[in-house]
Length: 139
Image (cartoon, rainbow, N blue to C red; front, side):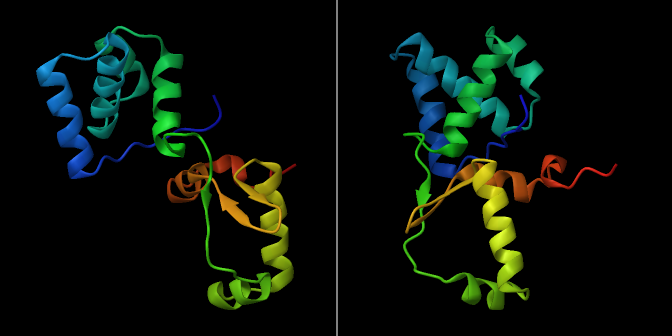
């Protein structure tokens, strides 16, 4: 599993999941998912969560991925129309550098661009948590 998903629940989401667990009138699968997300939000490792909730590591990984990438698994659409040139000015670089990174992100599956830019939440996760698999491999 190459990407680590970092779960951060809002106060409302945390409250909703806690209420769901306290009532206990949901399918067992949904209750386990709630436990996984609450434990992940508390900072527990995937292995700790898997042991505590009595599920496999892949279940923890998939649950966190679905939450981070969105409930329907589709990327978030960026509404504003921003050219590569404008984006380059905003971040203080050249248009060609922006193009290079957009192509790299497209190949890695972090964005879709077909006239409309769609950014997957996983890109934000990778950038915020400085995962090294985006860096150039030194020979």
